[in-house]
Image (cartoon, rainbow, N blue to C red; front, side):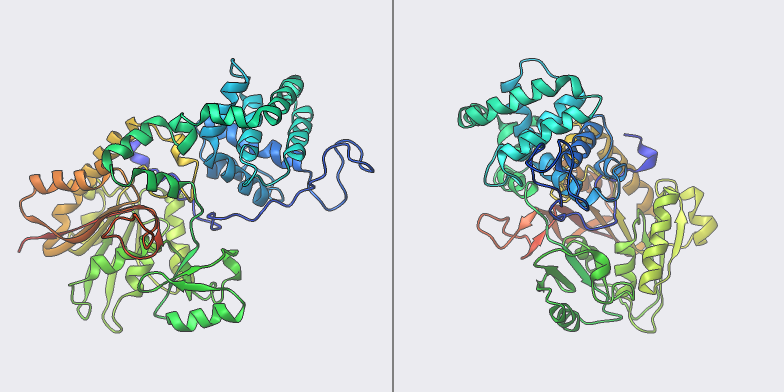
Length: 485
């Protein structure tokens, strides 16, 4: 972790990744009648090619690369199918690792291990396997034969997988008592959740292994929720309300196919993230000019939501900060599509001396949104690589950065103003514990009614946290702080 970069793993933007399209590949085993070994009919992609790319992406993630970067290196024609398979592999990687240890006492070379674990993750549970077991094994072996890094281990991989097919039930049963295999999260992550959420830790882990919904925020300056729902119904897209201005799609679709997306009618934003702007602005007089700071703003979804809530004729001046210039450019793209404007600065929110006087005239803000860098432990279902990339030591490092940001930004808030602190994390060190420490050191801060920790998943199901909002949303934390007059 390099603190000045404020990395946000699992927030890459781009196409909505919650439920990627099923891979389009030739399901025929290598050497099927009428098809030369390794060849596929014209216009199709061989399954072994996709499996090679999936294993390559898994190996990159294991070496510390983000899933976003690993997928970006995949050929565009293969990417949708590879993403679908990779996400399933990452959601079952704990089980796959445990099974591989049952099959091979010594860890194979990285490329062979990645390919073997890819096959085990995709095929260990027949009810969820995307392909028939023998097809999958044949195509994995074909992938091993085609790649220089795995060619020498092709027979070894074939032997392991054939044994797995023969002894599946016994091998799976031998891994059932391993928490990492059962829950598909690192051991330290499981232990931390058990400590932080003793009543709901299993619910969080199960939610992390499920698909997240594709949720839209309707731009009320351009459209109403009922009208947009009608537009969706007109093209046979079923949706249901999620929060005050949100709609969750029954089935995800490519973003460009959404009605009026290019014209700014709607944006893709999780239901939990949609709570930020209303929470921050509640209790403020929107009829009066407001100065608002979005301190860690990229890619600009919450910045845009704040501006969408501005009252007609009452100017809301929003300053959006982002330390990374590339990510900052995405804020401008978001605002341009929606027909909104803000002061966008490439700046470090933790160093107000570099930008507050020079670009904001040293004027105090009425409201500050601090969507702080965090472990992203609440959005694992959308970005399943996060759990395998994070280390337990990251929590303390990020908590220190969050405390630094709170300390730096609090003096910029006017008396009576409000600061909303939020993270997409379920770890208490980045949520409740962080805020309690801040309150203990800042007697001019009062905690207002706030959602606190939101548990990922569908909150209207049995066993959900009682004060969670109804609906399917990511894991999040919110604390609204008001400065004394």
